[in-house]
Image (cartoon, helix red, strand yellow):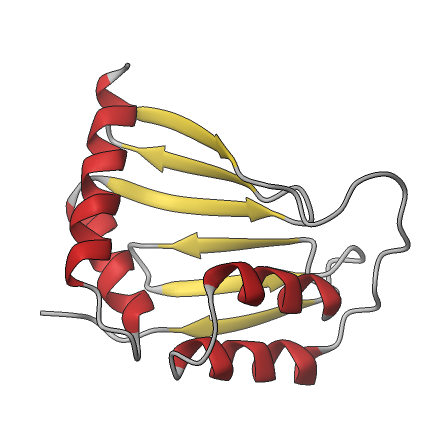
Length: 136
């Protein structure tokens, strides 16, 4: 196992151990940032996640949301915002958030841990940007 993978996995474990149920994403993001993660890009529906870290890039392949051919949903900013608010309120799982994001037409999203912002993209480069608060 590389130093980059070991550091990322340790940071994720620390974050999940102390993450509050409501509003947990800023805590997770800050824990990763302090561990040297600069950005995180998720590709949907593959559920592939690319982390750019001080120790090197790491890719994590999650369980895809679907298999075979599928039509890409139209980008629906209102549906995406609803999915975000459900997640932020702690009323769903991360897997449910990913599925709801895909159904809202998100094909990738990029987390900039330095600027504390997340940009969600549709397949025609439609986008929605949301910032998140700093965590002490």
